[in-house]
Amino acid sequence: MVVALKDILLQVLLAGSAVFLIPLFYLGLSRQAAAKVERNGVMLTSLALTSAASMLLCLLFVHYASPVDVPISLGIVPLTLVILYCRPVIGLTLTLLHVLFYFLLAHPYNMYEFLLQTGILLYPIVWLSASRFKHYTRSRKTRVIISLIAAELMVSGLLCIPLWNDGTALSLFQWLTITMGYTFGAILAGSFSMLWIEHIHHHQGLEQHLSEVHHRYISETEKLHQILNAVPLSIATVDPEGTVQFVNDTMEQTARNQLPCTTTSNLIGLPASQFVEQGQADKLENSIRRAIVDGEINGMTVRYGSYVFQSRTVPIYSLSLDQTREVTGAMLIIQDITELEMLRSELDNVDRLSLVGQMAASITHEVRNPMAVVRGFLQLMQEKSPQSLDHYYRIVLEELDRANSIINDFLSLAQNRISEKEESQLHDIIHELSPLLWADANLRGQSIELMLDHNVPKLHLNSKEIKQVVLNLARNGMEAMTEKGVLTLETRMVDDKVELCVHDTGLGIPRLKQEKLFEPFYTTKAKGTGLGLSMCRSIVERHNGTITVESQEGEGTTFKVSFPR
Image (cartoon, rainbow, N blue to C red; front, side, top):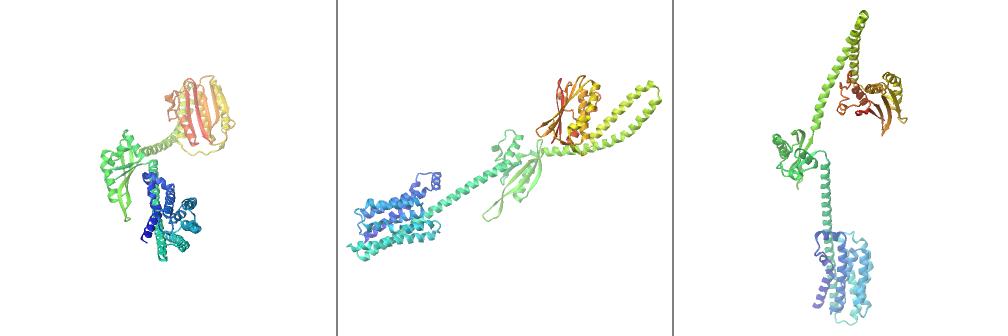
């Protein structure tokens, strides 16, 4: 009886060894390799291999090692676990292998021993339970394992009855005791094996979840860094002592503009006061201290050399275990407002110049009235004066007319009014001006060429203002040419814009003078007012267009006016 109990204990250990030998497959593997093996499902494959070895050992023990007359094999325990936990292909393979082991080891063959040692009668019940087993809770899985193994061992016990009647030396009590010992031992081995498998699965699930959380944390951290680096603001974080912990790319570039050799490693670990001039360091440190100690959000304007920055200090909070917020540092947000300050200053100047321009326009408008009176009296005096004085009167009247022309051009330039536009054909405007332009050209001994593109569409134009532009550019070109010069007016489509080109064959304009051509009161002519091209640019800009000049000395000049479609 003691020998029988020892045999039962040895078979229980052999049946349960299938699960407990699984960690041997991970010996010598690194942590990364073990994680990869678990992700690829090798744990279930190792369970199948150890179960196959356990089944073989149980059958070997029954046929060659056990002196007891009760040939019960507990190899059904690891086989049941494989069918329930592994893929159907693996379960089917081990089922066939279990049957094959019997025929390899048992000789002569006995139908009762075959049914007893393989447990083939309950294979269908185990296979039917496998389809839903993976979705059960742990307690229900335990009940299923106990029920299946108990049923298998009870069937084996019933199959032992014919063998007992054949004249075994064991009494009925001993037979029942051994059968119950095998049953409880198998249940114990199966239950512990199932709990061990569930523990491994739970451990793998935790590791996989931890790996996913870690990967998500790395991804979110990288995403946050990309966002911070893409933001067009200089951002730095500091710890409670005011030491820089992180800077984004914009902050690094801002610091490099001041100190060309600066890198991220140079900035981290130093006080945040390095971002401002020494005289404002205390002010910035005080702002950071208020953010960390009092949780206060505050801003200030700081200067570094010729640059002006808007600084904003924000406290950084972290949640503790008791769900309370604790300040762990501060974030320093710096925006370069140098250009904004310059634009604000220029806007103030523009407002003042606009006021001066309005006053000048009002004054020049009032000046024209007494000039008209003076001109009228001069004409009256010329009629009553001797002809010998006509030359002097003509000079005075011409200068008055010239002054009046300057006033008209200035008023046209100063009146920044909204143009009333309508759909017009640019070619029609040019054709209306052609007789006047030809008359001026004939008086100078020059000629005019028109190169008009038939694909030019209608545009929203103020015809009166465009006539001023064309007439002004054309007369400038004529004045720049000598006799036999050729003035060319060309229209063409360039991308989605209509381009008007006025080209002359004059001497050209030096490059230094080209940059000042559109400035008010700048002229290259002896008697020019310097307002014609300024007026042209003002009109073109009111039409949302652009005007440019191209000129080579000795090769002529081309003015290009572009209008959007």
